[in-house]
Image (cartoon, rainbow, N blue to C red; front, top):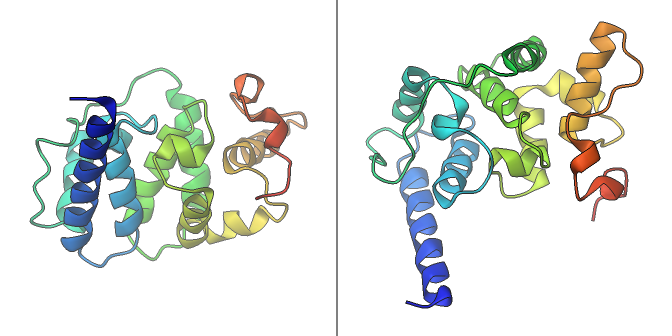
Length: 194
């Protein structure tokens, strides 16, 4: 089988998974965003650990609540416990997000944990999450953490913005994002959005 046929097979598989997730969604907040992340995870995109970075029991609750009756056991990687390294930093991010949650739905708590797990990656946050555009991430932030999103009035890249918020809490005035120095898009971070 040639590379083009493999790519088409992958796209059909991804479209099938996304279609099943969206067809079985419970109509709850964040279902579409979770479906995009899960579809990307199957395709090998993003940096989230299996189970979207959630504990296995939490991940099972998310799937049962947002996609009842959809069986993806064979396609999705098995969840595992989060790695111990950088746990304090991750918890600080979760706390920051939860302080600003909309308090509209339980999924905001899961979303805070997932976003914090993705912040451990080295690319743009929307890519590390497995979302399909920066617009998806902006929607995620506005819907789940509206007060925090409103503070990003200069349209700073989200990961850099979150780390800047952590630094401000600690009284640190010079605060680089965790991976800017190795990012291929460093020069674009303050360029206007296309």
